[in-house]
Length: 268
Image (tube, rainbow, N blue to C red):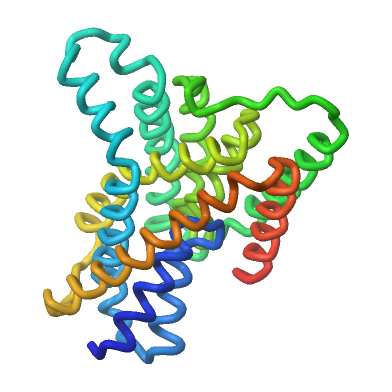
């Protein structure tokens, strides 16, 4: 694979992983339609591309990851280790993601190969715009920070994230939508969404690898794509988080809703 294609695929994955337009859909589209790629290589390209952004998120949130691992190693037999705070949020979110996502994957593969999530996207987008209008109508907003997150937030976030197994549905879009609906401020909603991407992508990579043929992508090409997506993913993640710090949650919800609705029509 030539250097231009590697840079383009890394750029597309690195940016779209964090915004609600489904990175897997965009990478596949660019690779097949603009780069003249081979369909049999789509799966391994997606696997390597997501490894790059997974590494970017892990390094960016290294302090949170270290705290989570430290708390588990410190008290591995205490049930509160797995139910309180961010640990409870992540575990509940992953469980309910699987609860919703695996049946959808089965339906897609066995029953409804043409299944699409456009109507869900439209509902999510409309809901976010209505949320933004409600927020704008309130003079004093009691918004939550990431420190208040718990397993109940994880359940709701996981249920919506499970819908991202549908073609065209964005993981970032579903999780940030759920967290905004749970009244988190802009920065906290996105930070928690991106933190959740680490175990979620690991789980998805395993399922993706087991359930699909890997193809014959040369290892060096795959590693180059991973490096490219890591670089662009890390840089864009930092830019996005710095941006949302300065944005009113109401306007952010409206922008996110509009992007999701546009993405829904784009998938038609």
